Amino acid sequence: MNNLYGTLNELLVKLFNDILQIEEQALKCDEFQDLSISEIHVLEAIGLEGSRNMSSVARDLNITIGTLTIAINNLLRKGYVMRQRSEEDRRIVLISLTDKGQEAFQHHADFHDEMINTTISRLSEEEKKVLVSALENISNYFKDKYNLKRSKAKTEKTN
Image (cartoon, rainbow, N blue to C red; front, side, top):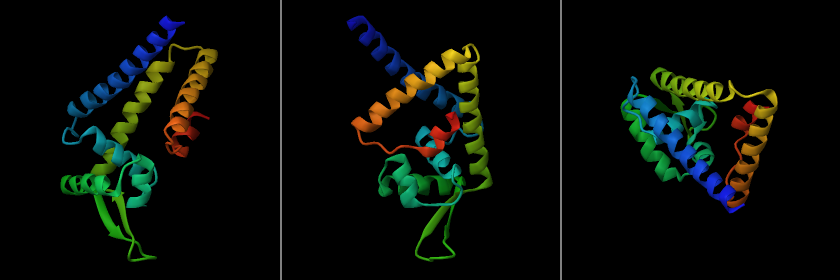
């Protein structure tokens, strides 16, 4: 049993690190090499919903408004996002993707699609169900243990 725990721990840590490294390499090889992984994840959070306020994006990413403001300022400077005032309430500042931001968002989404399709292409339907169930259990454990927000948009993709 101890060997099982050690193997699972090693696999989870390696998988997490590998995915981050592969994401970084995918960005560096393409036209979006000026983006960091953190910035691409900010674009992803905005891109999933369209035009959003800063608070909702920060909440979805589990980061502070201050941290998000720094990222948004960098993304503005690089031409990936834009700020605009809400028509309904001029006090609210909305952020959205520019055309360049949409391209980067789509590039990242395509990367994830390819990664998932390649991963599951060799699995039977039963193995796919077991994999989804196991990953949901792991994800739920971490969310419960560390009081993380549950992401509806990503969960709905798997159902």
